[in-house]
Length: 400
Image 1 (cartoon, rainbow, N blue to C red):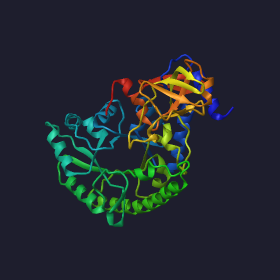
Image 2 (cartoon, rainbow, N blue to C red; image 1 turned 90 degrees about the horizontal axis):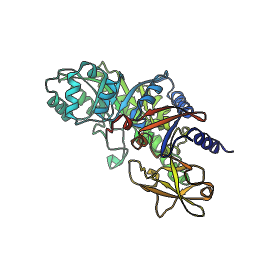
Image 3 (cartoon, rainbow, N blue to C red; image 1 turned 180 degrees about the vertical axis):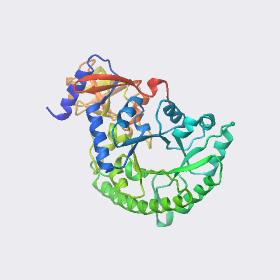
Image 4 (tube, helix red, strand yellow; image 1 turned 45 degrees about the vertical axis):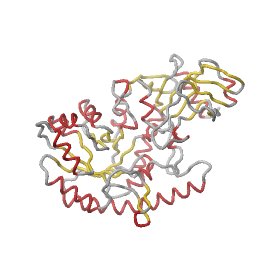
């Protein structure tokens, strides 16, 4: 029996009392992935990206481990909810235009001390001030640096379109704007190198593309390390009380951690290890989060149909955004139908061994987005479900 077949047998036994659709997290794999992130971080603390987890119980579990510290959130509403729930260090990774929540933040000393908001434009400060509604608490702000690699005099750009702040001078200018403005304090810098941390460099069957990605990422790491260090020096000259410099992501933990200027690493997807993280040479994780759909039809030889499974991930539309049939091994989509909202045909010889009501296990393309489809996660240890915990959705929150 292969390791994957053994996992399937365990998951089927653990969830035999549960009807699919059902989502699980394998705690042995989750904890092993956490250990691997810590190893790669080389002693620097890891801030957990909540977008990739979306389950308070699992955030608490990983933050209880030495080496993990703080949460990187994705909306202001979520940030305030987490702070009210007892999370004391929440960094909002994206600028917000949520005026009502800014009014809450600036009126509550506990929230203002626990939550750091992201800015990259003085207009965002204007919006916060206009939303204060009498709130006078000092707002902790983090400045985001554009990490993109610019080539040929800027005519070619590699990287996500996030912050407009690319040079040390631009970031320092914004830091000065904050310093001159009552009610705000610069406490951090963030630089997320998504073109390194979130792009696989070992794409199956595409050796030339994989080599090109590795060359691009090596160049990007060198350029960003120099520029990030210069940015930190420039900002510290304006804001000597700078508390943290955040960088990285699951795919670049060890590289980012090696930079002296970086004080903490962000990671989250590496805990669940969705399918988009299979294509890396720098690490190998264990799939920890899976979902199962029930077989509801047997249309013919070599074909079964499962309920639903059309859970695409965000990003540029493509086959890599679809969940992948994982267990039993050897199933594939019908190219004429793909993954459907209400039913999905699956082809392959393993289909002939599946009966009505059997489970087919899938891996989502991304990590936390799976939790937008399920109210609960069943936590598996060995061949038993040892706990069932709510996702954000299960607690009544869909923040985006």
